[in-house]
Every structure is written in structure tokens, then in C-alpha cells.
Length: 109
Length: 114
Image (tube, rainbow over all chains, first blue to last red; front, side):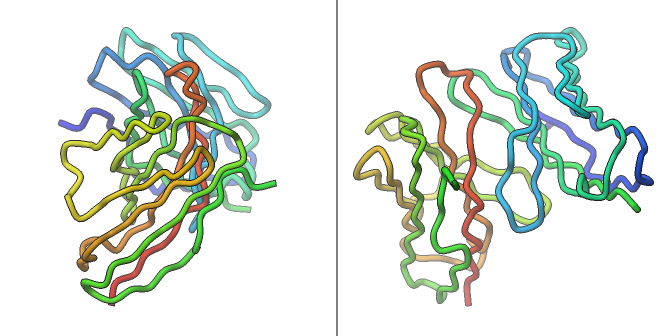
């Protein structure tokens, strides 16, 4: 079993839809949680970062962490074609990050 | 205002011919990482430096080496590239004052092996 599981998609939604992306994990030692966005042929770009259970909002993005269920989510409101990318969850403890394999999102105009 | 810069963006080398990838940063972060990412896969950590201290992952092949001559620069050396080493190589940095700080990535070097 992988330490971090993420549905690879692809996930195709119409413009303006609410998008929900999810990851589950098995290691209860993970202390902090991140979401990265990766466009084709580019490096991962940090979107959201949190180290506690609960919700964190930044513009159209909301990150949710449920440590008791070992489950994290990223919600994108009013999705735009420019949101089309691969979204990677990542979590860690100490100086090591473990990534999910990414969910490919396509937002159709 | 790129903060983590990787050169070159694309590198082609021959099977078995040594190749060096470079990473520089303007963030003055003391932790630097090298990851390997294959198509549709998660980035896989190869090694990282905390200041000058080198930390190798247990499953990183001996074929992969790294050098960090100063805070700003870090190099990835692949001594004898095989076809399976074709991938995107990502460099990342982190402010090591606290272990839970986020990592910041460059745009990667895409390595092809002929």
C-alpha cells in the first residue's frame, strides 16, 4: 500500500464548476499537508499549505484536512480553464515530503 | 523573478555518457532537494542537503551523485545514464529553520537518453 493515495483522473468539469480533489494517507506521523499545482512541463507550484485539521481558504481554493480519517481535500470554486493542470497532494514530517501521484484536471470552457 | 532556476530545461545525452544537471536559488534557503519525476508519477526524492550535510535516500541508485559547492548551487550528476533514467528532474529548496516549511520547486530539467 502506498503511503499516499490519489486518484489520477482525469477529471473533466465545465467552467464554473466546484472541483473536489482528494488524497488519503496511511502514516499518522505526517504533520503538515500541501497542495501543489503542476502545469505541463513545469515544476510544482505551491497552492495551499496547512499543518492542522480543519479548513484553510485562499481565494477560490479551500484546503481541508481530517487527521482522524487521514484524508485531505482541495476544493476549487468557480473553476476556470486556466485551472487545468495536475494537482499533487503532499504531506510530510521532518524534512521529507511524500507526494501523491497527482490528479489531472481539465476545465472545459 | 524566478527563485529556483534549473539549467538546462531540456537535456539529451547518450546511453552511458555522464551528465550534470544544475540548480541555483536566490531564496538563500539552506535545504536543497533533488527529485526524479516520471510521466504521471509522483516526484521521487533522490537526496537532499541540509546546509552541507548530504542525505541520501536508501533506494537512490549509486549512479546518482550530488554536489553542493555553496548555498546557492546544487548539482545532480548521473554517472552512467540508462534508458530508465529518462525523466524530469526537479530541484526544490526549503527554509530549514523549521522542518515544516513548504518546498519551492524549479521548473525542472527534462532528461532524454538516446
